[in-house]
Image 1 (cartoon, rainbow, N blue to C red):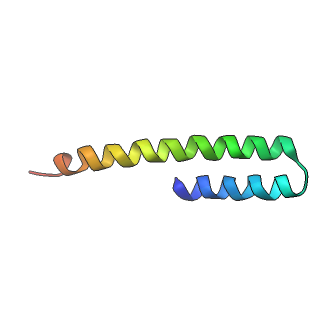
Image 2: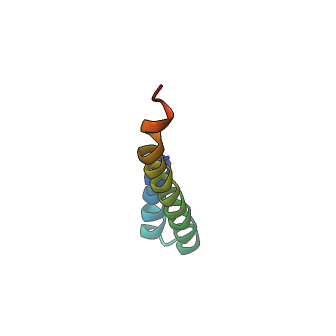
Amino acid sequence: MLRWAATFFVIAIIAAIFGFGGIAAGAASIAKVLFFVFIVLFVLALVFGGSLFKK
């Protein structure tokens, strides 16, 4: 998921360089959402990951 966020971030930068403001804003928004979803899932995995797989 972090890879997808980085991909959309790169797309946003390239679109901004070429002057496509709408596409850049959309790609940046998607990248931001994916990044925060990744952070939430990462923290949940850290908190609950150890307790879920212990027997």
